[in-house]
Length: 164
Image 1: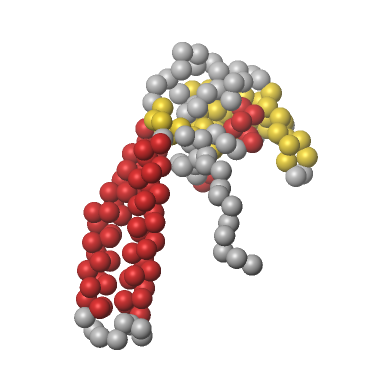
Image 2: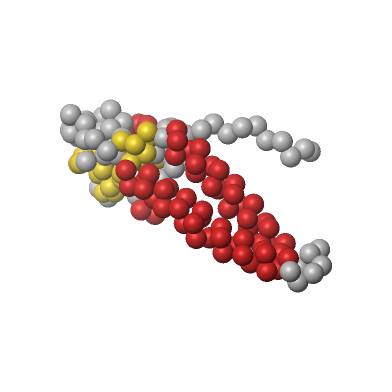
């Protein structure tokens, strides 16, 4: 089997201001802080002679490749993203960047923020706009019912609050 993989579909091109700032900070950290440190470490390791058995040199070169790959990705991605930081005219409707409180059938409530695919983090309740739940919520109004299909069956939620 070859190493070729079909290209992955790019996520939506929207991001919140906080998400864009976080990506910029990561790019700055990688390029201005981490890459120079690793470059210096590789340079010092290269002075030690035989590079084929030099773990610091081999690891450093591998880490440099990872950093360069991530820097290339972030640079391209930041150029194509659209930063959304305006509130919509209708704030009773779910749009990108909304904080939406959902109540399930048992009465448990959870609040999610709908964000771009580059900044989603379920631990912080940031839900990608490309996810099935977010796609089902976008365009809904307060007190609307949201249904999604899951492997365990249909899940039903009610929108109890929307804020921006």
